[in-house]
Length: 144
Image 1: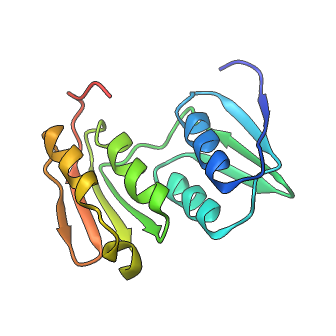
Image 2: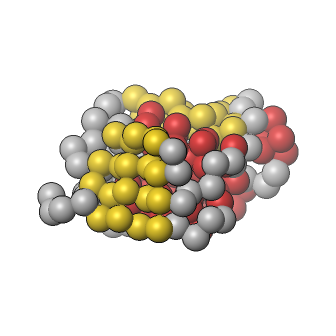
């Protein structure tokens, strides 16, 4: 791991969520300044913590140390009403040999998750959507 990287995020939730995912997948210690404090941002932060990333929040700064990530066999990830988390996290983590339950709010389930399920089926992941949860077992054989 190299020195700490500092990123000043554009204060939009959409931009921040993409920066945070990149930081999580970077195997670096990254500080993100100027992040927006909103429900979708907090949902993604909490989801990444559940997925084993070390995240610390201070006033207007987030530190994420993605290496080493605490890996488990089973994860329960609350995506709530976040469309970004609901669609992106299952695809990224389908490349990991583990069991996942992604929980959604009823409102999120009412939105169309079929394109996500179609993509996962094409990757031979075969998710199961039951009530407010999407269950899947990832595979290390994917080249995502």
